[in-house]
Length: 95
Image (cartoon, rainbow, N blue to C red; front, top):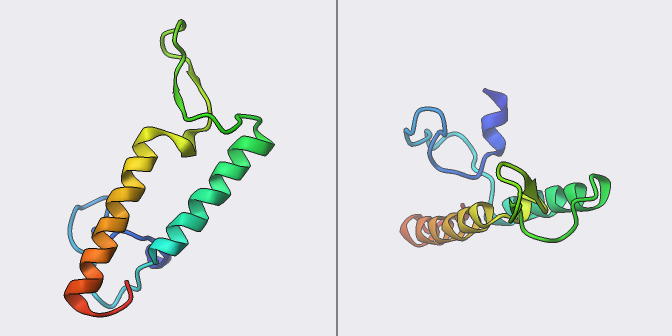
């Protein structure tokens, strides 16, 4: 798949298997830029603002805020950073 060349994870999200080393992996910096782009798009164009994505306090099933600023996405970014730094130390190459 051509779009795999731009993914940041070292594991294929569909199979859970490690990607072959010949597939270039995007950097953490690229992931940050992608998140910033999504945050801007959701915040400005869709008028979802800068508040984190969360369930509405009084309406079950309704969500408010910016999805790219959710706790889940934030935790993923921290995890991705740790994995990229670990891979950098192990391989000695820019991941």
